[in-house]
Length: 69
Image (cartoon, rainbow, N blue to C red; front, side, top):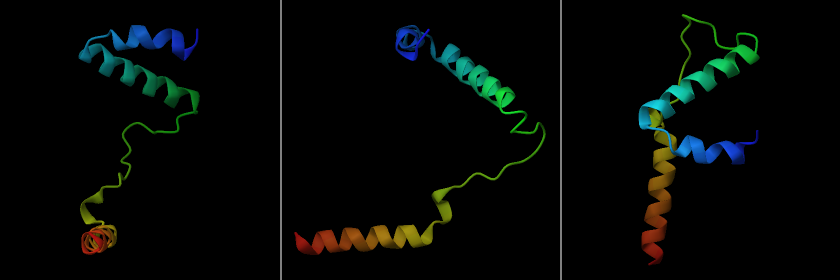
């Protein structure tokens, strides 16, 4: 079965069932990777809340765009 064949059925699922499907797929992928994610272990997740350099670059680009208008 291909992804194209499965997508219409996935789209028809309820929100709860879609979330459950995501959980099942994530679990299956983890199993396929020989315990790539260890149970009970913490993993860092990047967040843009402290991306000050990126924010400054974005503000500079916005200011440049504004001055050209």
